[in-house]
Image (cartoon, rainbow, N blue to C red; front, side, top):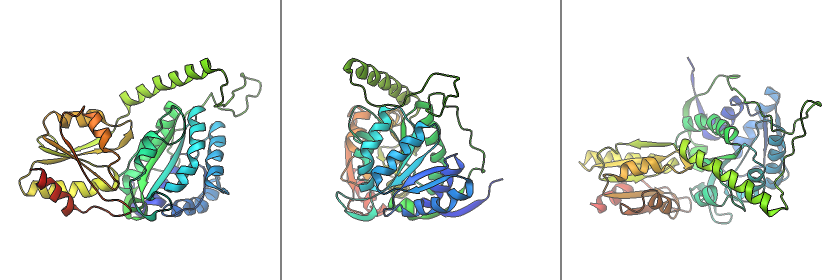
Length: 350
């Protein structure tokens, strides 16, 4: 039986990644994720791994690219402005079909903004992580335990489809402490990677990791093949939690830390006799259209709750084909909505 330990979100992410078989970390400090990198600096030497504080976020993501090309599990972490700097490298990794995990513990923006929690990087993560035609897997935990659980799943799914994956957390989850159960050390099952540039010993042809194709016909073919793989991801990898949605007239849609607030508001609404429910996307890409459509079959209104100016709203509308009115309530700049504020919005929709 696994024992529960009390851990801060950032440190739980780091320990879970190590236990998922990631023994190579490259990063750069920025609030509110710095504890993750600091934890890695202490633990990696003890597991025979590599911790390297790069000279910049740009250097860190390219180190991850090189490590992944060699066939090993590698990870980097940062917070909002640092992820912007990593964008070029993430695009190179997508263009090279390389798996890795990127952590974004979001802070307020744009610009340097502030160090308080935010969800204003949704568009960046799901639609514009970097230049070109590509997608990355995006997972949105709502508890420290889910951070632990999703790290292993993110590495496994990234390896399965040969694409980068992101854990999109925020400063609230990164800094809070909750009891967690960690997987046993040494329990990770790492897949073979016959495509890796890891030395061939004269037993196979050379593997070349590359994202540059000067022949447009070849590049188009590769991009189309990649998008065929993305369709498989959409069909097989959608994840969402459906809470009290079976008879809900008003369905809230919220992810990450905001979903904790939304769940409290749903419970308060139910206490007042209001049929409210919650769909919590766990994968932001692929977006959980199936769960939303189930709720849209009987709901009268949707209410999206975010710590942003409503970046997820259009995805909800598209997912349900605008069959039901979609409303929005959010706070931004590092402000966190309260259950009372969300309940007020629910009551207004009646």
